[in-house]
Structure formats: C-alpha cells, structure tokens
Length: 241
Length: 320
Image 1 (cartoon, helix red, strand yellow):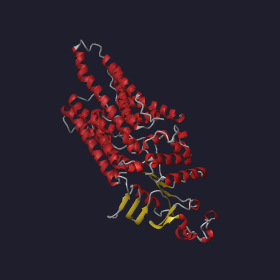
Image 2 (spheres, rainbow over the protein chains, first blue to last red):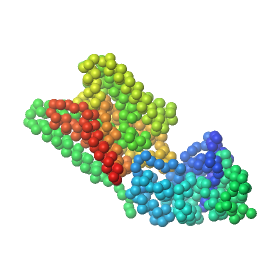
Image 3 (cartoon, one colour):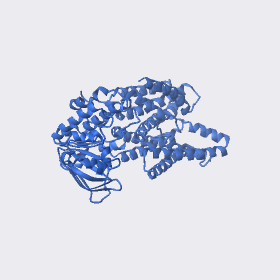
Image 4 (cartoon, chains in turn yellow, brown):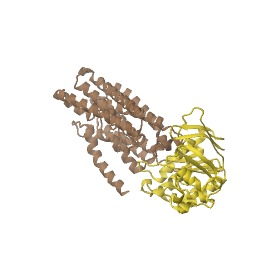
C-alpha cells in the first residue's frame, strides 16, 4: 500500500507534479501558514479534486469504494452547534461505541463518554477527535493497512499526550500504516530523525525525505524566512553542524 | 462493551399515547354504534380531522428534525426556510382576491397553497444554489422569500374586505377542519412517501453533525444528502400547509425537546419526532373537541401549550 500523487494542480493553493509516500512511513508536513499543507492533506484524503486533467491520486491496494474504512483525516474544524456527547460522536462517526483499549490507553478518552463535547477543554476535545479519527479506520490500522492524516493534531495537546501519542503512531507505522501529520511543532523533528519530512512553500513541495538527511539549519531560513540569529535555542538540532 | 442499539421504548410509548388519544376521541362519540347521525358526524367530520392531525403533525415535526440537521441549525423550522410563506401568500390571493368561486374553495385552496409552497421552495432552492448552497445561503434565501411574501400578504390585507381578512387570519393560524377524503387521499399519499424517504436517510443524517467535510470522509455526499432532504421537507411542509394552514411552533418545539431528552441520534429522533408531532396534534384536536363548539385555531393552542413547555425544557437543559 502506497500513496501516489501525480500532476496535482489547484489554482493558487497547490501544485505537485509527483509525490510518493510508501507504506510504513511517518511524514511530517511542515511549512509556513498558507503553504498548502492542509490542501495537500485534503487532496490525499479525497476531499478536494485537482483542476488538472491528468491528475492521479492513488492509494494502491485499496478499492476507491472502501477508502472510508482505510483512510481517516483529522481536519482543523470539528465543531457542532448541537450538544453531542462523546459517546454519540463515537457512535455516529466510528464503528465503535467506546474507544478500543489501545487507543484509550494513549488518549484517555473513554472517561468522557457521557460528557458533552463542547463542555470539554480544548485539549480534551482534540484528544476525543484524534481518537474518533483513529477509531474510524481501527480495523485497517490493526492490519497495517491504514492511512492516517492529521492536520495540526498537536494543537492544544499537552506535552505528555503529544509524547504518548507520537510513540503510539511510531508503533502503528512499524506495522505498515502510512501516517502524515501537518504541524508547526518543529521541535519534534529533532526528536524523530528517522521519520520523513515534507517541506512546503507556496503550494509546492520544496524538499522531501528522511529528517536526518534533509533537515538543516538553512531550512528555517530558506523556507520559513527566519534570520539565522533569530532561530530559537530549542530548534538547534543535533544535525545542525 | 457491545454497541448499544437505539432505545425503542420511547417509540412504543409515543405509539401508545397516540392510540390512547385516538381512543379518547372515539369515546367522545358515545352513540357511535347505534346512532346514524353520530356515525355520519364521526365518519365525515371527526375521522378526516383526526387523520389530518396525524399526518400534519408527523410531517411538520419530522421535516423540522431533518431540517435542523441539514441546515446545521438547532432552531430551524419550516418557517425559517420560507416554505410556508409562499403557501400563505397563495391562500391570501385565493381568499381575499376572490380568484376562485366559493364553491370550489374546498379543493381550490389546498391546491393553491401547495402550488405556492412548491413555488417558494423552488425559488429558495434556486437562490441558494446561486449562493453556493451553503447552510446560511438556504436560510438567507428563505428569509428573503418570507419577507417578500409577508409584504405582499400585508398589501392584500389592506385591500381585502372585513369578512375575507378574518377568514384568512383564521386559516393562517391553522385548522384541521378543511380536509375532505379526496384531498386527504392525495395529501396522505405524499406525506407517507415523504416520511418514508426521511426515515430512509435518518442514519446518514448523523454524519452531518460535524459539518460537510467529516461526512465526506465517511463516504457520504453531504451536498446531495442536503438537497434530497430539502426537497422532501419542502414537499412535506407544502402539503401540510395546504391541508391545515400554517401551524406555528410544532416543528421547532418537538425535535428540539426530544434532542434534549434523548440525545442527538437521528435514528431515534427522526421517527420519534414524527410520532410525538402526531400525538401533539391529536392533543390539540382532543382539546378542541372537549371545548364543544369553539374551534380554536391550532397555532393558538400549539403556542399556548408549547411555549411554557419549551421554557421548562430550556431550564432543565441548564441543569443537565
């Protein structure tokens, strides 16, 4: 199972001539605001279609009709004006009434079962939505045939949960699942040298490959326009010469 | 833990209440088995009235329950998307304008209202489509159409004679007494089809709570679902207004209260709204029957009974 994108063009948002994401990888998609990170995730998820005629978005070995059982995508906006409980959310959007033990161990969401979502704190809500997304494709994940897309999942998550959840994702990656995370927590790149990074700018992929080989101090200056003297201490990576 | 099935107890209770209310209404005709006049009254007046109440109550409450979800607005009701306003305007033209001879009013009025409801729904749909069919576009288009219709109706009032305007006022506040069997046969058929169609989509509606994108991720086409539900609701409301006038508050009240008590699962809320809406309309008919002789407009009763209940439920919700 691989993701293959070809000739993707969406005016003023995204232009990717070719992109290949193999099974068993965890990719960090980074870039400035408006660089096209969310658009890229939405294209992979099948939410947006390319405007070009020869565009191809393929997830090999997965029938297009079964995509919803294999691919999940955490989007940035998940609010409801209706007072849904966590249990209802799980029932409406996943095949499970409660989170499977493995997910609950990491995200501790089952304790909120009877609570209204909008009464939870921002971080608690984020954990619930992350759990919901993973539960949607949990069967596929367990077979190592899941495609997990997350758009800014670290937002509002406290560090303890970020650590636990990322460790869980690395386990799932080992089983063959494809994981793509768009985020702004660049410090995580220093911690995960064996993950992949995909740097975006102006709707185009500027660099793509293993973090240890690609992530350089120049990247911050080149793609984020941060002058060298302004690079914060915590972003001075072990591979920064 | 196994996946809990939806509770069916509330559905059975609602059905029991409906049967009970029907029983009370039948028992009001004490000489039904022996007296020919009583039989005639029951078959030609009471029975069509009861059937109208059942059909209209379930159509209004059920379509509102669905509209609230597809428009992503817990306070939506058929009034908010302007379907009933077109029907009311056509009723005004027929009653005040004297377009039809009074002998043909019995079928002419429902027909005119239905045409009006369909025209206004079509217009709202076209307007909203030009505005990209977002939730707010549908509501905005509805408000625009309602305002235009209300203005036109107000002009009619100015030029109408006293008796006609009084007739129109009563009609606009809703009544179950206009229905006849031929009209009921047509209206009932359409309403039953609409109810069936909404029930068919009740599970898919659950995927719309978090917005269109999350529904799309589950493999559902939210735009198509919204369009289909809007068309079904327009038909249901159009037919209801045609046979019983415009009835306020039931649509907003019933699903809103039910969601507060039983949660948001549309697999329960959609059918339960239909049953409770029907039961509520039967209560109104029963009250009207008990008040022998005085035929109170339905909207007067729905607002009088429903308003306080609504306030009570709001306070209950605060404490939850």
